[in-house]
Length: 90
Image 1 (cartoon, rainbow, N blue to C red):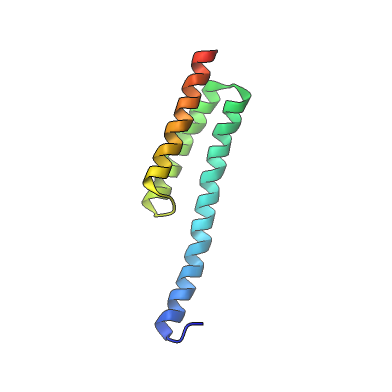
Image 2 (tube, helix red, strand yellow; image 1 turned 30 degrees about the vertical axis):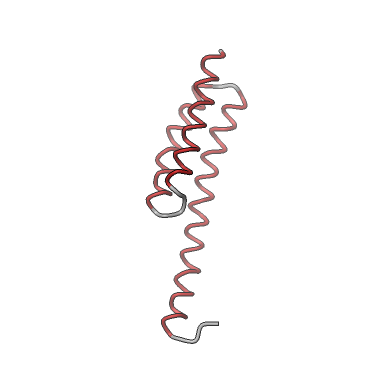
């Protein structure tokens, strides 16, 4: 339990920030799931469009400190490779 006014305020701020960051992280996951669903369906055009929509959201997560920069870079790279492989296969 916080013993100082400043610590109590920090706890309130942390709680608000956790809600915002959780929503942002959830939104990023939703965008990624759309890409993966399009890949699973075998539709490279839809997957590419979904990735194009997901990238700015993921980068925004990095700039807001929700996700690590290398994590997002790795995820984008792997999704891009899977879409590229999908296009080459068909």
